[in-house]
View 1 (tube, helix red, strand yellow):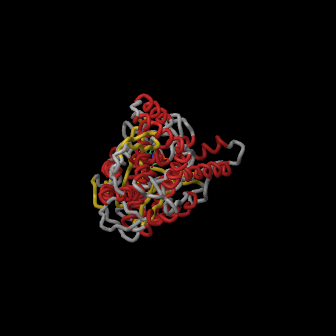
View 2 (view 1 turned 90 degrees about the vertical axis):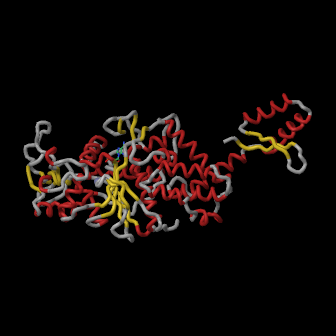
View 3 (view 1 turned 60 degrees about the vertical axis):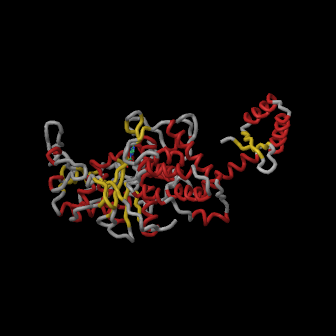
Length: 487
Ligand code: AMP
Ligand code: ZN
């Protein structure tokens, strides 16, 4: 893959509510943080959307700035009350800490399998919240010192009225968060929107020693601390799904900016739209979800298994900010399109073997597609460029098609090699001698004007998946027939 510094990236920034030119703080270390899963249960295909969208962004950044100059952090949230509840439920006979370990390990392993199947690159770092507790305690101490936090009833809370710009990301005014007729304020909170930085744990709950007693951190704090630990006090891009804008990202900004006395935690905030089922966000609480694993391994959705690249394309057929209504029809469409693209790559002459690997992996994407990708990941533009190359007739089109699909993570040398081998096997399974014999019988029938017999042979071959194409030999003018396996 080449580095392409001519490409100018534009991104829609939730913070400014505008599409802006992307200018990294340091071009030799572009820094991206994406909120990762809370590992209490298998990820559903709605959770797959940010993983795929930000993987595409990561690939674009690597293409423009160089692989070594982009750092991508996606965390694992392995401390959360949902995890504790799941552990107690699934392993009632184990000591809670041991049960929690089992739940988080199993879920994390599954998540890794899932995202690999979706052809996502590994992030540069994948920090676990439990490895950063000391940093969390430190940040709370700083916030207390600077009067942005207070202790009440066994909790340390962030005081949102202590921050002038609180609510800038989600465009909420502090007045709206104040105690009012509609929001019941917990007695111990100064403002209804004050959120937990630390809370005490009971003896049976997991906890860490701190100046405020044995307890555990609040969720928002985890990302502030992991982002600082791996990307510094201010990074370039922070991303996640739309539902994270408030309160999660708003509160991350509050903690980080107040602790570091910075006006920004990240310069660009990106949010993907929801994956929906019948107009409703797919979520655990709605119960309208299907896990990535179920889609890949079971036949619960549309009566068959779907491969990760199909799900990936099904997501990428829509611009990332827009909602997707998920359906079997969408998967079928993605399957058809991807199959057509892969066939075109082979039909136009690319061969996937050891000798060709290096050259193929270095194939460049189509430059117009790159411009569309750099334009806030404009997927509709991207898909139309892919279709354009797929309808081309030259090896050049195959090269560009492969280079582009590879950049988007929709194919790799390995997936194309598998596809090629499967196709070769399918061809070998065909009895070539039999087909050639039937074709010559049919040609004979045609020459005798025995149309009925000729049609019978054609139809029999069609039933066996072989289609015939009649033509004329250019030199002799004789009738000839070629055949192919129907796609
Ligand atoms: P959670 O485990 O709920 O914190 O979600 C992990 C990530 O998935 C976050 O970035 C969420 O915003 C995102 N997410 C959750 N549900 C959906 C959905 N239905 N569509 C798109 N993104 C989602
Ligand atoms: Zn986060």
